[in-house]
Image (tube, rainbow, N blue to C red):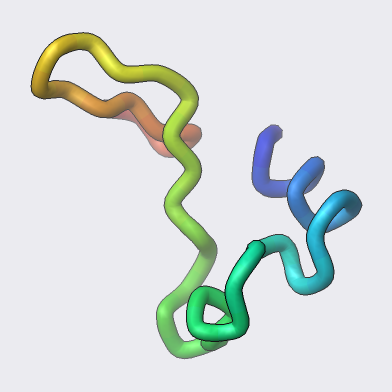
Length: 44
């Protein structure tokens, strides 16, 4: 899963202290995009 890889590469799994806020939940990870649609590691 991309989120697990990000935790290894980035401290806290994100590249910004603002995104590391625990109350926001897990970071949104975009795997791909097609036109106006973004597909995440959680589905479309």
